[in-house]
Image (cartoon, rainbow, N blue to C red; front, side):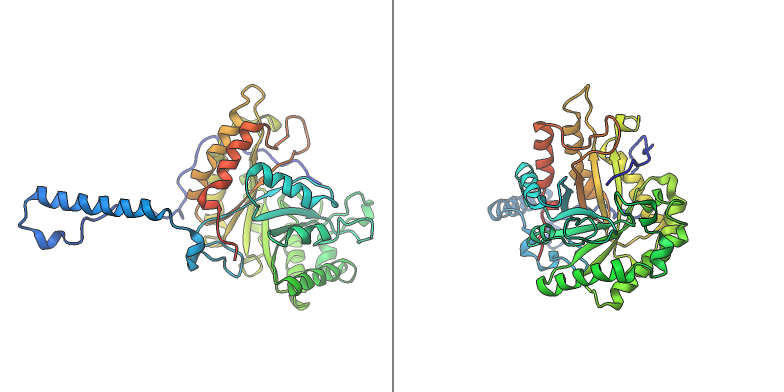
Length: 382
Protein backbone atom coordinates (compact mmCIF):
# COMPACT_ATOMS: atom_id res chain seq x y z
CA UNK A 1 0.00 0.00 0.00
CA UNK A 2 1.50 3.31 -1.06
CA UNK A 3 0.61 6.97 -0.88
CA UNK A 4 1.64 10.05 -2.80
CA UNK A 5 4.78 11.75 -1.60
CA UNK A 6 5.22 15.53 -1.65
CA UNK A 7 7.28 16.75 -4.57
CA UNK A 8 10.90 17.77 -4.14
CA UNK A 9 11.79 21.26 -5.29
CA UNK A 10 15.58 21.19 -5.26
CA UNK A 11 16.77 22.72 -8.51
CA UNK A 12 20.53 22.33 -8.41
CA UNK A 13 23.20 20.09 -6.99
CA UNK A 14 24.05 20.88 -3.39
CA UNK A 15 27.71 20.18 -2.72
CA UNK A 16 28.11 22.08 0.51
CA UNK A 17 27.49 19.28 3.01
CA UNK A 18 29.32 20.03 6.23
CA UNK A 19 30.17 16.44 7.03
CA UNK A 20 31.62 15.22 3.76
CA UNK A 21 35.21 14.06 4.35
CA UNK A 22 37.98 16.08 2.70
CA UNK A 23 39.60 14.78 -0.44
CA UNK A 24 42.83 12.90 0.23
CA UNK A 25 46.01 14.77 -0.58
CA UNK A 26 48.30 13.60 -3.35
CA UNK A 27 51.56 11.64 -3.02
CA UNK A 28 54.47 13.35 -1.30
CA UNK A 29 57.32 11.94 -3.36
CA UNK A 30 59.71 8.99 -3.31
CA UNK A 31 60.76 7.94 0.25
CA UNK A 32 64.46 8.14 -0.55
CA UNK A 33 64.31 11.62 -2.00
CA UNK A 34 65.88 13.41 0.99
CA UNK A 35 68.91 11.11 0.99
CA UNK A 36 69.88 12.15 -2.50
CA UNK A 37 69.78 15.92 -2.29
CA UNK A 38 72.99 16.33 -4.25
CA UNK A 39 71.84 14.24 -7.19
CA UNK A 40 70.80 15.96 -10.35
CA UNK A 41 67.09 16.73 -10.52
CA UNK A 42 66.60 14.64 -13.61
CA UNK A 43 68.10 11.63 -11.85
CA UNK A 44 65.65 12.03 -8.97
CA UNK A 45 62.69 12.35 -11.32
CA UNK A 46 63.78 9.30 -13.27
CA UNK A 47 64.09 7.24 -10.10
CA UNK A 48 60.66 8.33 -8.91
CA UNK A 49 59.09 7.46 -12.25
CA UNK A 50 60.71 4.03 -12.20
CA UNK A 51 59.23 3.31 -8.78
CA UNK A 52 55.78 4.47 -9.87
CA UNK A 53 55.92 2.30 -12.98
CA UNK A 54 56.86 -0.70 -10.86
CA UNK A 55 54.05 -0.04 -8.41
CA UNK A 56 51.49 0.31 -11.21
CA UNK A 57 52.73 -2.89 -12.81
CA UNK A 58 52.37 -4.75 -9.53
CA UNK A 59 48.85 -3.35 -9.08
CA UNK A 60 47.85 -4.45 -12.57
CA UNK A 61 49.22 -7.92 -11.93
CA UNK A 62 47.46 -8.41 -8.64
CA UNK A 63 44.10 -6.88 -9.62
CA UNK A 64 41.92 -4.57 -7.54
CA UNK A 65 41.64 -5.12 -3.82
CA UNK A 66 38.68 -7.27 -2.85
CA UNK A 67 36.72 -6.03 0.19
CA UNK A 68 36.06 -9.66 1.07
CA UNK A 69 39.79 -10.08 1.70
CA UNK A 70 39.88 -7.22 4.20
CA UNK A 71 38.55 -8.05 7.69
CA UNK A 72 37.84 -4.36 8.20
CA UNK A 73 35.12 -4.62 5.55
CA UNK A 74 33.03 -7.18 7.43
CA UNK A 75 29.59 -5.86 8.46
CA UNK A 76 29.17 -4.50 11.96
CA UNK A 77 26.73 -5.76 14.58
CA UNK A 78 24.23 -3.22 13.19
CA UNK A 79 24.66 -4.60 9.64
CA UNK A 80 26.69 -1.60 8.51
CA UNK A 81 29.20 -2.31 5.67
CA UNK A 82 32.33 -0.31 6.59
CA UNK A 83 33.88 -0.23 3.10
CA UNK A 84 30.91 0.63 0.90
CA UNK A 85 27.15 0.22 0.77
CA UNK A 86 24.48 -2.44 0.34
CA UNK A 87 22.37 -2.64 -2.81
CA UNK A 88 18.70 -3.57 -2.44
CA UNK A 89 15.27 -3.06 -3.92
CA UNK A 90 11.56 -3.12 -3.46
CA UNK A 91 10.24 -5.70 -5.93
CA UNK A 92 6.46 -5.75 -6.49
CA UNK A 93 4.98 -9.10 -5.52
CA UNK A 94 2.10 -10.96 -3.97
CA UNK A 95 2.59 -12.58 -0.58
CA UNK A 96 2.86 -15.98 -2.27
CA UNK A 97 5.48 -15.20 -4.94
CA UNK A 98 8.06 -12.93 -3.32
CA UNK A 99 10.94 -15.37 -3.82
CA UNK A 100 10.18 -15.83 -7.51
CA UNK A 101 9.79 -12.10 -8.14
CA UNK A 102 13.06 -11.35 -6.34
CA UNK A 103 14.87 -13.94 -8.45
CA UNK A 104 13.39 -12.40 -11.60
CA UNK A 105 14.61 -8.96 -10.59
CA UNK A 106 18.05 -10.32 -9.78
CA UNK A 107 18.31 -11.94 -13.21
CA UNK A 108 17.68 -8.57 -14.82
CA UNK A 109 20.03 -6.62 -12.58
CA UNK A 110 22.77 -9.24 -12.83
CA UNK A 111 23.40 -9.96 -9.15
CA UNK A 112 21.88 -11.06 -5.87
CA UNK A 113 20.29 -8.32 -3.80
CA UNK A 114 21.79 -7.49 -0.43
CA UNK A 115 18.48 -6.19 0.98
CA UNK A 116 14.88 -6.94 0.03
CA UNK A 117 12.24 -4.45 1.19
CA UNK A 118 8.71 -5.56 2.15
CA UNK A 119 5.72 -3.88 3.78
CA UNK A 120 3.26 -4.97 6.48
CA UNK A 121 0.28 -3.56 8.32
CA UNK A 122 -0.78 -4.12 11.93
CA UNK A 123 -3.83 -6.23 11.21
CA UNK A 124 -4.65 -9.47 12.92
CA UNK A 125 -2.96 -12.43 11.25
CA UNK A 126 -5.11 -15.20 9.77
CA UNK A 127 -4.28 -18.23 7.67
CA UNK A 128 -5.46 -16.46 4.52
CA UNK A 129 -4.26 -12.93 5.28
CA UNK A 130 -0.54 -12.41 5.86
CA UNK A 131 -0.27 -8.61 5.56
CA UNK A 132 0.19 -8.29 9.33
CA UNK A 133 2.65 -11.17 9.67
CA UNK A 134 6.29 -10.15 9.88
CA UNK A 135 8.61 -12.73 8.34
CA UNK A 136 6.16 -14.67 6.20
CA UNK A 137 7.35 -18.05 4.86
CA UNK A 138 8.28 -16.32 1.57
CA UNK A 139 10.27 -13.64 3.39
CA UNK A 140 12.10 -16.26 5.38
CA UNK A 141 12.99 -18.08 2.17
CA UNK A 142 14.34 -14.86 0.65
CA UNK A 143 16.14 -14.09 3.91
CA UNK A 144 18.20 -17.27 3.73
CA UNK A 145 20.83 -15.43 1.68
CA UNK A 146 19.68 -11.80 1.74
CA UNK A 147 18.90 -9.23 4.39
CA UNK A 148 15.33 -8.10 4.96
CA UNK A 149 13.96 -4.63 5.60
CA UNK A 150 10.47 -4.96 7.09
CA UNK A 151 8.31 -1.85 7.02
CA UNK A 152 5.60 -2.08 9.69
CA UNK A 153 2.77 0.43 9.31
CA UNK A 154 0.14 1.40 11.87
CA UNK A 155 -2.62 0.57 9.38
CA UNK A 156 -5.13 -2.18 8.73
CA UNK A 157 -5.17 -2.24 4.94
CA UNK A 158 -8.75 -2.67 3.81
CA UNK A 159 -10.02 -2.57 7.39
CA UNK A 160 -12.76 -0.39 8.80
CA UNK A 161 -12.11 3.00 10.35
CA UNK A 162 -12.45 1.49 13.79
CA UNK A 163 -9.81 -1.13 13.03
CA UNK A 164 -7.11 1.44 12.21
CA UNK A 165 -4.49 1.54 14.99
CA UNK A 166 -3.54 4.94 16.36
CA UNK A 167 -0.23 6.02 17.81
CA UNK A 168 -1.90 6.67 21.16
CA UNK A 169 -3.23 3.11 21.29
CA UNK A 170 0.16 1.67 20.41
CA UNK A 171 1.93 3.82 23.01
CA UNK A 172 -0.62 2.81 25.66
CA UNK A 173 0.04 -0.89 25.03
CA UNK A 174 -3.45 -1.59 23.67
CA UNK A 175 -2.02 -3.65 20.80
CA UNK A 176 0.64 -5.49 22.78
CA UNK A 177 -1.15 -8.78 23.33
CA UNK A 178 -2.98 -9.01 20.01
CA UNK A 179 -0.36 -7.67 17.57
CA UNK A 180 3.00 -6.45 18.87
CA UNK A 181 3.92 -9.34 21.16
CA UNK A 182 2.87 -11.90 18.54
CA UNK A 183 5.16 -10.40 15.91
CA UNK A 184 7.99 -9.69 18.35
CA UNK A 185 8.10 -13.38 19.25
CA UNK A 186 8.14 -14.34 15.56
CA UNK A 187 11.12 -12.07 14.95
CA UNK A 188 12.89 -13.41 18.05
CA UNK A 189 12.33 -17.04 17.02
CA UNK A 190 13.61 -16.27 13.52
CA UNK A 191 16.81 -14.85 14.97
CA UNK A 192 17.33 -17.74 17.36
CA UNK A 193 16.79 -20.31 14.61
CA UNK A 194 18.78 -18.65 11.83
CA UNK A 195 21.18 -16.29 13.61
CA UNK A 196 19.96 -13.50 11.33
CA UNK A 197 18.97 -9.92 12.07
CA UNK A 198 16.36 -7.85 10.25
CA UNK A 199 16.00 -4.16 9.59
CA UNK A 200 12.66 -2.98 11.03
CA UNK A 201 10.99 0.34 10.27
CA UNK A 202 7.91 1.64 12.10
CA UNK A 203 5.60 3.90 10.07
CA UNK A 204 7.94 4.94 7.30
CA UNK A 205 7.34 8.50 6.09
CA UNK A 206 5.59 9.30 9.35
CA UNK A 207 5.84 12.97 8.43
CA UNK A 208 2.94 12.40 6.00
CA UNK A 209 0.79 10.63 8.64
CA UNK A 210 0.25 13.47 11.08
CA UNK A 211 -2.27 14.73 12.15
CA UNK A 212 -4.40 11.78 10.93
CA UNK A 213 -2.51 9.23 13.06
CA UNK A 214 -1.80 11.65 15.92
CA UNK A 215 0.72 14.28 16.92
CA UNK A 216 4.50 14.09 16.49
CA UNK A 217 4.77 13.43 20.23
CA UNK A 218 2.26 10.58 19.88
CA UNK A 219 4.44 9.04 17.19
CA UNK A 220 7.60 9.25 19.29
CA UNK A 221 5.85 7.59 22.23
CA UNK A 222 4.47 4.83 19.97
CA UNK A 223 7.88 4.19 18.39
CA UNK A 224 9.61 4.05 21.77
CA UNK A 225 6.95 1.73 23.17
CA UNK A 226 7.39 -0.64 20.24
CA UNK A 227 11.16 -0.59 20.66
CA UNK A 228 10.99 -1.08 24.43
CA UNK A 229 8.39 -3.85 24.14
CA UNK A 230 10.66 -5.81 21.79
CA UNK A 231 13.50 -5.36 24.25
CA UNK A 232 11.35 -6.55 27.18
CA UNK A 233 10.54 -9.70 25.21
CA UNK A 234 14.22 -10.37 24.55
CA UNK A 235 14.21 -9.56 20.84
CA UNK A 236 17.81 -8.72 20.05
CA UNK A 237 17.95 -9.30 16.29
CA UNK A 238 16.30 -6.05 15.13
CA UNK A 239 18.16 -3.14 13.56
CA UNK A 240 15.85 -0.17 14.16
CA UNK A 241 15.48 1.94 11.02
CA UNK A 242 13.76 5.34 11.05
CA UNK A 243 12.58 6.34 7.55
CA UNK A 244 11.35 9.79 6.49
CA UNK A 245 10.34 11.26 3.15
CA UNK A 246 13.29 13.61 3.13
CA UNK A 247 11.10 16.45 1.86
CA UNK A 248 12.80 19.43 3.48
CA UNK A 249 9.63 21.46 3.95
CA UNK A 250 8.94 18.86 6.64
CA UNK A 251 12.18 19.61 8.47
CA UNK A 252 10.41 20.76 11.63
CA UNK A 253 8.39 17.54 11.68
CA UNK A 254 11.53 15.43 11.25
CA UNK A 255 13.12 17.00 14.31
CA UNK A 256 9.96 16.61 16.39
CA UNK A 257 9.37 13.01 15.27
CA UNK A 258 12.89 11.68 15.77
CA UNK A 259 12.69 9.09 18.58
CA UNK A 260 16.26 9.73 19.78
CA UNK A 261 19.68 8.26 19.11
CA UNK A 262 19.22 5.45 21.63
CA UNK A 263 16.13 4.27 19.73
CA UNK A 264 17.44 4.52 16.16
CA UNK A 265 20.20 2.46 14.53
CA UNK A 266 19.87 3.65 10.91
CA UNK A 267 18.18 6.66 9.30
CA UNK A 268 16.53 6.27 5.91
CA UNK A 269 14.98 8.73 3.48
CA UNK A 270 13.03 8.37 0.24
CA UNK A 271 13.82 10.79 -2.56
CA UNK A 272 12.96 10.45 -6.24
CA UNK A 273 13.04 12.15 -9.58
CA UNK A 274 9.26 12.31 -9.92
CA UNK A 275 9.25 14.57 -12.98
CA UNK A 276 5.76 14.59 -14.56
CA UNK A 277 4.34 12.58 -11.66
CA UNK A 278 4.46 15.73 -9.49
CA UNK A 279 4.84 18.20 -12.37
CA UNK A 280 8.39 19.12 -11.42
CA UNK A 281 11.44 19.68 -13.54
CA UNK A 282 13.75 16.78 -14.27
CA UNK A 283 16.10 16.24 -11.30
CA UNK A 284 19.38 14.36 -11.50
CA UNK A 285 20.21 11.76 -8.86
CA UNK A 286 22.51 14.32 -7.24
CA UNK A 287 19.71 16.89 -7.07
CA UNK A 288 17.43 14.41 -5.32
CA UNK A 289 19.99 13.41 -2.70
CA UNK A 290 22.52 16.01 -1.57
CA UNK A 291 20.24 18.55 0.09
CA UNK A 292 18.37 15.98 2.20
CA UNK A 293 21.56 14.12 3.08
CA UNK A 294 23.27 17.28 4.28
CA UNK A 295 20.21 18.45 6.21
CA UNK A 296 20.00 15.14 8.10
CA UNK A 297 23.69 15.33 8.93
CA UNK A 298 23.32 18.88 10.22
CA UNK A 299 20.02 18.56 12.10
CA UNK A 300 19.38 14.90 13.07
CA UNK A 301 22.60 12.88 13.29
CA UNK A 302 26.14 13.32 12.06
CA UNK A 303 27.15 9.70 12.55
CA UNK A 304 24.20 7.29 12.16
CA UNK A 305 24.45 5.09 9.05
CA UNK A 306 22.13 6.39 6.36
CA UNK A 307 19.99 4.45 3.92
CA UNK A 308 18.47 5.55 0.63
CA UNK A 309 15.51 3.39 1.53
CA UNK A 310 13.75 4.17 -1.74
CA UNK A 311 15.32 5.82 -4.76
CA UNK A 312 14.36 5.88 -8.40
CA UNK A 313 13.29 7.92 -11.37
CA UNK A 314 10.29 8.30 -13.58
CA UNK A 315 10.84 7.96 -17.31
CA UNK A 316 10.61 10.80 -19.81
CA UNK A 317 8.18 9.87 -22.60
CA UNK A 318 9.79 12.43 -24.88
CA UNK A 319 13.35 11.17 -24.26
CA UNK A 320 13.38 7.37 -23.81
CA UNK A 321 17.07 7.18 -22.86
CA UNK A 322 16.81 9.74 -20.11
CA UNK A 323 16.04 7.29 -17.31
CA UNK A 324 19.09 5.23 -18.26
CA UNK A 325 21.27 8.34 -18.12
CA UNK A 326 19.79 9.16 -14.70
CA UNK A 327 20.86 5.80 -13.27
CA UNK A 328 24.31 6.18 -14.80
CA UNK A 329 24.90 9.09 -12.42
CA UNK A 330 24.21 7.09 -9.28
CA UNK A 331 27.62 5.57 -8.39
CA UNK A 332 29.61 8.81 -8.43
CA UNK A 333 27.13 10.62 -6.20
CA UNK A 334 26.57 7.65 -3.91
CA UNK A 335 30.27 7.46 -3.08
CA UNK A 336 30.22 11.15 -2.16
CA UNK A 337 27.28 10.84 0.26
CA UNK A 338 29.10 10.46 3.57
CA UNK A 339 27.66 7.69 5.72
CA UNK A 340 25.18 6.34 3.17
CA UNK A 341 25.52 2.60 3.66
CA UNK A 342 22.59 1.23 1.64
CA UNK A 343 20.68 2.17 -1.50
CA UNK A 344 17.38 0.46 -2.35
CA UNK A 345 15.89 0.92 -5.79
CA UNK A 346 12.11 1.33 -5.96
CA UNK A 347 10.93 -0.74 -8.92
CA UNK A 348 7.22 0.05 -8.88
CA UNK A 349 4.78 2.87 -9.30
CA UNK A 350 3.23 5.50 -7.08
CA UNK A 351 -0.43 6.47 -7.40
CA UNK A 352 -1.31 8.91 -10.16
CA UNK A 353 -0.62 9.50 -13.86
CA UNK A 354 3.02 9.46 -15.03
CA UNK A 355 4.00 7.95 -11.67
CA UNK A 356 5.48 4.66 -12.82
CA UNK A 357 8.95 4.66 -11.23
CA UNK A 358 9.89 1.16 -12.38
CA UNK A 359 12.82 0.56 -14.72
CA UNK A 360 11.28 1.38 -18.10
CA UNK A 361 13.28 -0.42 -20.79
CA UNK A 362 16.34 -2.50 -21.66
CA UNK A 363 18.64 0.50 -21.85
CA UNK A 364 17.63 1.57 -18.35
CA UNK A 365 18.13 -1.99 -17.08
CA UNK A 366 21.62 -1.99 -18.63
CA UNK A 367 22.39 1.23 -16.79
CA UNK A 368 21.06 -0.06 -13.46
CA UNK A 369 23.03 -3.26 -13.97
CA UNK A 370 26.23 -1.20 -14.14
CA UNK A 371 25.23 0.57 -10.92
CA UNK A 372 24.67 -2.75 -9.17
CA UNK A 373 28.04 -4.05 -10.39
CA UNK A 374 30.01 -1.13 -8.98
CA UNK A 375 32.55 -2.35 -6.37
CA UNK A 376 31.21 0.21 -3.88
CA UNK A 377 27.92 -1.72 -3.84
CA UNK A 378 29.48 -5.18 -3.61
CA UNK A 379 30.49 -5.73 -0.01
CA UNK A 380 31.00 -8.93 2.02
CA UNK A 381 27.82 -9.85 3.87
CA UNK A 382 29.50 -11.99 6.53
